[in-house]
Length: 198
Image (cartoon, rainbow, N blue to C red; front, side, top):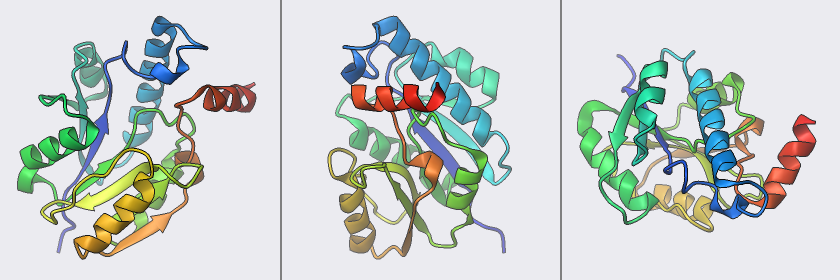
């Protein structure tokens, strides 16, 4: 019996709109370049996993057409402007039964490694979740399609996603993969990143 197809979904804000909380330390052009660099790194890491049937960038950023072609992934032009959760529900409906599970990853994971992704995919539970370093946000999420799972991104999403697994009766595993815990959002994150890479 073959495992259900796994699709990776990576939401990406338009480059000039992303990382707005870093506006005090980085220019718009520098923030756009940073987003592209981290996305390219993540796609390079994912490239080594044959278990991933398809990788989908979800964005309104037209410059991603070239990026997607370079890495051999697909670009889904999001239609809703109602926020990340609505976008992910839209994408999930569009994917339908073509995937059995979805792995949702942010594009801003500067330390993610193949070992981190492998730890995620090694779980036999239908659902998997990894928090951010504060234990409040969600930095990786595996959900089965067709389960009725509703995305709960935003402040406190880690607890809300766990409740959603329970509400839908989906068995899940919580993991703490080191390279998935750090995402880049705030000036504090930027200072920590600079300290780690210097």
